[in-house]
Image (cartoon, rainbow, N blue to C red; front, side, top):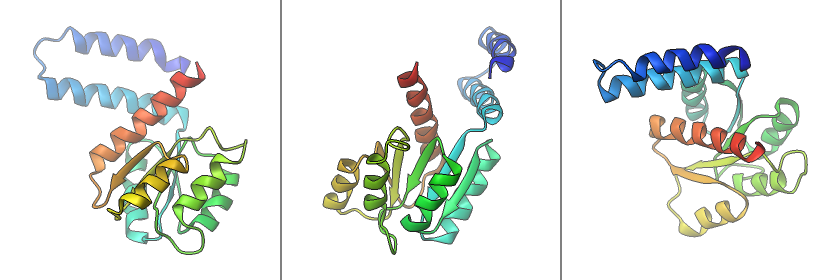
Length: 168
């Protein structure tokens, strides 16, 4: 990341002082710069969802933005993937077969090797009790399906930024 720090600052300063750009163009350019840094960092994301279409959609969109992505279809296989992949952030569905997302999150937060990894819940449920249980299990954020990709991507990026601020 250090190798890209100075060039990115120079690019950002050129953008900032270019008064011909609209706010949307600034936002887009800054997002591209952030993604360049993340791409070079090898930012790792684990997606655990029992719906293959969701996994494919998210994998495609996050990889397109430079993320290294692994998927699992349930909490049981998710824990195995977690141990091998060691992601920076985990996106969990709540309702899955074998081991649900809430129980997987509890396992993650009770394991000293993984408890620092931020968890974002993504689920079709609107059951307040399940959502509260997910957050009490250690989830940082919750987003409902259907997926709003830009919102989800922004949440993951903010979680990653928060994680780096906590470490510093």
